[in-house]
Length: 196
Image (cartoon, rainbow, N blue to C red; front, side, top):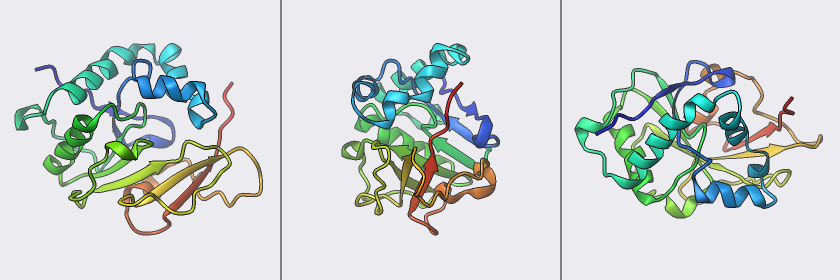
């Protein structure tokens, strides 16, 4: 079987490993880009169409592996990084994809996983490993959600307007680790960055 691509992230995620999938072929992502959500300004799609075009084959391979096959122990990579982000780019495709991410976290107890998703309906949250922090990625800009959905530990909000108490903006996730720890603030608010 082909191997999963583990990405070394850059920017504010420098030092964090990422397991990403391809938003350009994810029907949920494509549908959300047409609506009035944060997805209409998707940085992942823009990057894959531009400066990160070279990532698309590996992330598409991840999409297929994670959503169509139950990973066996021999398919699960060892991840030496202390911090791992599920979906710095991409989104859940189906429940199998969710279960495969949980298998990866269970096989790597030495790492802390931050699991970002908008797709609560695909998450089976009854027996999460202790090293996984579930972060609901609020799709609605400027409508801060103050509590995470049931079973989630955090909610990540994005705003464009002033007047919100922004508590995500240190620009260094490795130092902050708020989204990797279940304790602390449940509500994260970040100001949308202007591109270009």
